[in-house]
Length: 401
Image 1 (tube, rainbow, N blue to C red):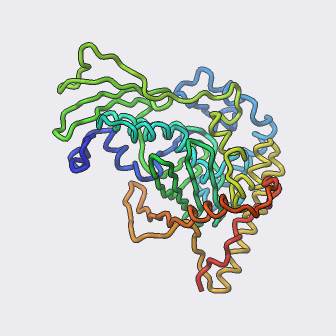
Image 2 (image 1 turned 180 degrees about the vertical axis):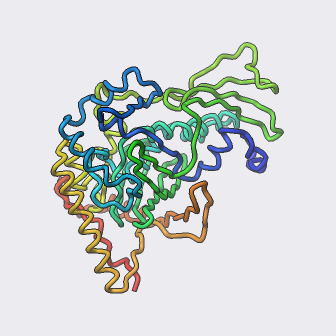
Image 3 (image 1 turned 120 degrees about the vertical axis):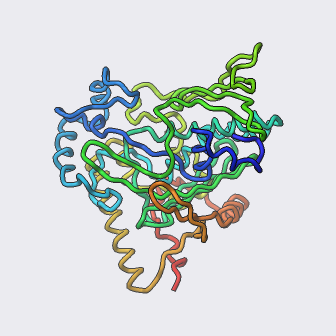
């Protein structure tokens, strides 16, 4: 990877780092994990996320669902084999985690301190070490087996109180499912568009936003504008990354040592969702800003029920939300209205990916104005936002005639 913007095109053949660069402005990982592990279903192969099978059966049985739940839901899931599950309204909640895709986008910010350090660093090569480490760190958040909830059209997620970051994401399209997000603090701004395509094959769950690394292993170099290696980087994206200055042959410089630049955050012991502490904070109202939007994912009743472990209620609430979404669509189409996102605008930009074209949405700045107005207002009564009814259709007046 070159330290000069003018030489970025020269480095498109630099292996993993060129792939990372191409996905740097987009939502970046392709997940391919067995759902057999989460079902714990007898007679099928169970795959450990770490790549082995020694303790996979134990992992599959670890504390999330009762055996009768797994057996019952497995029978239900036969009818979905070969289906595009983004269009299946009744996919059982067993395969879900208590988080939406909008919240999962916010997980990109878990290690945002690396971007802060990149901004503060004067050494151009170390800036790329920090920025590259952040880009690689996001892969860990997408190795979990569970499927996030598809957001309702118009649903949002806000995050504050993390590294000075203001984060907003919005479901901007229902078919195909598309989400847009924007994050910023005093050091950086980051924009992301996600277009989701999933297919349930019975023994795997594929999610294809964009990009893929190897199997955990990461090895590469930070290059100068003259295409000479300056810093070698090595590690595993599910563990840690380290760096070391190197010579023009890519060998470590004498008298230098390999230093860790990033490592995966701790996961609470026996956590049934394999969430880091930050992932739990995403669902927490501690990271919510003042006067949370009623369309926020935290308020979804199906997500809340699943987080409590109440599968029956989660399934009923999920079906209810999806029926409300279908009713809203029928009503909107009967009036000849077209849904218009509130916080993001569709651009003319189209980005090609291995799985098709990706339309790009751009942050329009209105959320910054909204948040500034809310934060400066003295007339807002502080209420328990947990009592707010989830309403992703609160901005219906944005529909265009």
